[in-house]
Length: 423
Image (cartoon, rainbow, N blue to C red; front, side, top):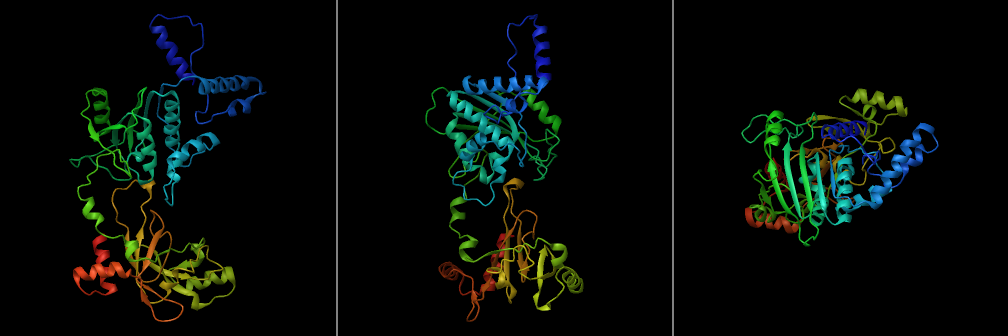
C-alpha cells in the first residue's frame, strides 16, 4: 500500500505533474471481504482510525464503482483463512454438482481471487481480468465447474502456461531443465479473461501457449512477446471437463468401451485408520504386545493380524475396535480371511500429477495411509458371507463379457490381468 503510493508519486513527478486535487485511488482493504469488517475492527483506536476510514472508502468503491480491470498475483494458499460469508457464497458456483470426495483445493485463496474478479467483471458486463496464478485450475479434475463458469462468463480466455511444477518433475519437451518463475513448487500460469460488452451467449474462445525452460529463458520470452505476437494454440473445451490445455481425445472412444474396476469388482473397502500407529502397529509381535499392555493392560493374541502398512512394509496390527480410530469392521473383515485384494490409491487434485502408478496387491488388512497421495480403495477378490462359502467379488455381466472374449477364466487370473494392465 505504501510502496504503491510512493512509486505512483515518483512516476507522476517524472512527467512534471506536481499538484493533486484529490487522493490517489489506492485503498487498504481485504479484497475478499464485502463489508466494512476491517473498518469496524479499528474504529475507536486513535491512530488506527485512518485504517478504518480506508476500509470504509474501499467498501464504497466495491459497491458503487464499475470495475473494468482486475490485475494481480494473488496468494496461493490451500489452507485459506479468508472464510467470509460473501466470498464463500460466490465460490459455491465452482463447487456445484461435483460429487467429489475432496474439494478442499477449490478453497485456495488464488481461486477465491479469480472468483472475486469474475464477479466484478460480470457485474459490470465488460472488462478484463489479468492474473498470474497457480496453474492447477487449467486441467485439474475438480476444477471443471470453475472452468465451465469462466467459459460462460467471458468471451476470450488466454492462458500462458509457465509450467515449472517440481511436484510433477516437469521437464521441457526436449528433456532439458524446466524451472519455476518463482521460488515455489507449484506450476504457474498467466491468465487473461476478457468480457465484451455484449456477451454472445457462447462459451469463450480459448487460446493457449506453453513456455518451458530455465527461469531466465521464460523471463526473456515474456519480455519479447505480447498478446499479438504469441503463436496461440486454439483450444475447444469439451464437456464435462472443459480443459483449458491441449488434450488428445483420439483414443477416448476406444477407452470408454472398457469397464471400470469398480464395476467389475463391485464391493470395496477403505483402509483402517488407527489414530495411534505407534502403539497399534508394529513389525514385531512382541513389541506390539508390550505396547498394548501399556495402554490397555491386557493382550489378546487372537486380535493380531498381518497388516499392509506401507508399500512393501508388512507388519502387524492389533485389531481391537475399541482402540482403533476407524476399524472399518463392517467392510474390511473380508481381508481377515484367506483373500487377495487389489489396492488402488486415488490421485488427489492438489498433487496435480498427470500419471497413475498407485496399484498394489494385498493379502491382509490395509492401512488408510498406505500411500501418501491419499486413502486407498481395496477391492477384495472374495467375499465371505455370514453363512456359506466364500464367493467371488465379480460382476457376472462383465465376467461374461470377458469370458466371451478370452474364454473361461478364474478370479485370480482376472485380478492378475487387471494388475498387469494398470501397471
